[in-house]
Amino acid sequence: MLQGTYINYDQSSRKTDDLNYRQFDYSYIHNSEQKQNDVEIDISKYGLEKLFLKYPLKFTLW
Image (cartoon, rainbow, N blue to C red; front, top):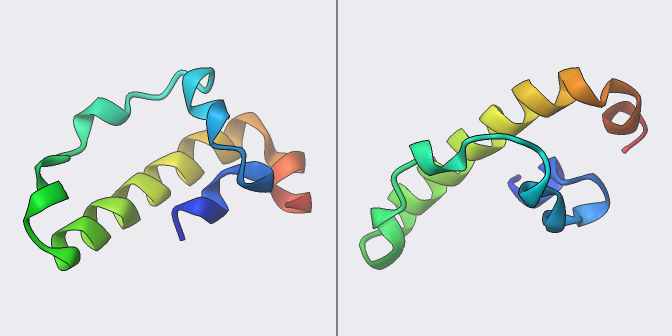
């Protein structure tokens, strides 16, 4: 799900999309897959909410 939030899977856009990804708890890295999945879903929803408004045509085509 997370990869699909990047148009053409281009994750380099994270550097220029002006979103605050630091608000998410990355302490899951060494804990559990379930926690990692939950955080990645939250990041996906956040990205889609914000970026779809900025690039509606690109996301619709993607």
